[in-house]
Image (cartoon, rainbow, N blue to C red):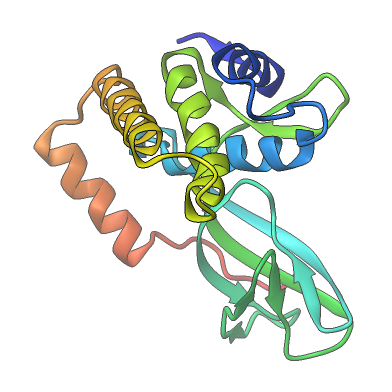
Length: 194
């Protein structure tokens, strides 16, 4: 399994299409690649995590590696509703701490020290077409590209996704049932206070 970074994907995007200004759209591209990595994660990558979040103005910033929020607890260990507000978790108090249990995708440190999702080389074509697809959807909706070009983008996106999913090892039926149980019910450990 070979790991690549988002800059490699951005370079591939620039080679595939001249319609996206990679340098000007760097932050959006990073965000879309991050989303694609989360969407393409196979269940064998999932990591169960327990983390303490700082609450400011009634909101706690969720971790960037979050795939699924399982439970949230206040500073006394009492479970609280996990109400998400975009990238934040709404807290029942203005300041303090919240402990969260969640499923995460493994992260690697980027060149600038930023923690980024692990990007697999086998999925690189799909990451590229995912970003192109998201950017060009707006163009297509506004009538700036033809239906034929949009159909081509859709076809490339679907083919890249199928190829990426075909490159990972398939789980046995027993493993899939175990992962499904974990995703639906969660396996929880010590719920002690912060």
